[in-house]
Length: 323
Ligand code: ADE
Image (tube, rainbow, N blue to C red; front, side, top):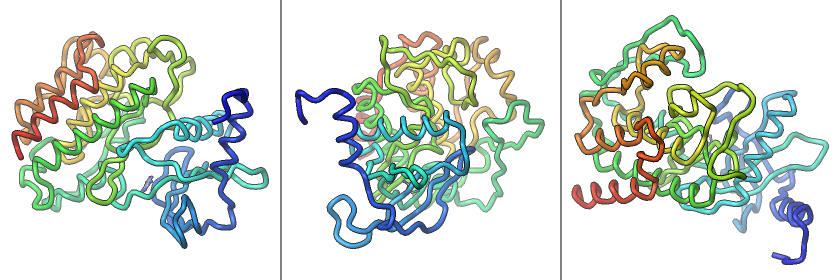
């Protein structure tokens, strides 16, 4: 890097370094869709030092989106430029030139989202209904408590599940060292690549920490209530410790093979329940050790929660024991 360059110069140099020609991209099918964004599978010609075509994932906006969605996608792009870790999704390039939509090109994770992968690995043929996590006041209640996953999967062992948790903690420890807060850590935003490697993804809501270790979200956007720490629900405070709370919910998602957290609890009631000390109970399939970790992640005072480094250590020990 050129030490004498100004911030804006290095930024444009960075963009040039990542720019990928649109005409070398063959867009295929949709991999996932959010409210504003869409991820498509594509073939990219000679990308990232690979000869010939490679399968990649391309993130884009769905239509004529407002400036704030544009900004979120750009912020995800800028975030991804800064990071490099085996458990964080890798940026491969971007199409940023005018005359076409903004495309962010990342590595392809062949097994898709951790949530869908866990649910596919349930051996029962039970139709799993889902409560939309963003919808306030959902009148419907679909029971998806532990009883539908009591038959353990032939494909995934308990050790595989602990390994997923360990890898997520590793990636998150890296991000928190980088002063990056994810803000939307959930099984739906974790991807699984070849060799059962976890890739932390969906940085659309993530923010750099500029002041101290707290990000204060100013505007009231749509928020993943059932993954949020008390202080995020209460005061829109986001820190690595609020990511740790979300990690606890992800642990719960993992041990239930992708169930929806707080089944039957309406979003507008959740804050008062948590404030009164209520926490999700220990799933049938969950060891005491893992449940203890969840409860630590859900401590009311953020400072009393473990750090991601602590979590890596605890999960490491659990992996050693089951080796
Ligand atoms: N769905 C969303 N992002 C993806 C990716 N990078 N690879 C595979 N499926 C995805």
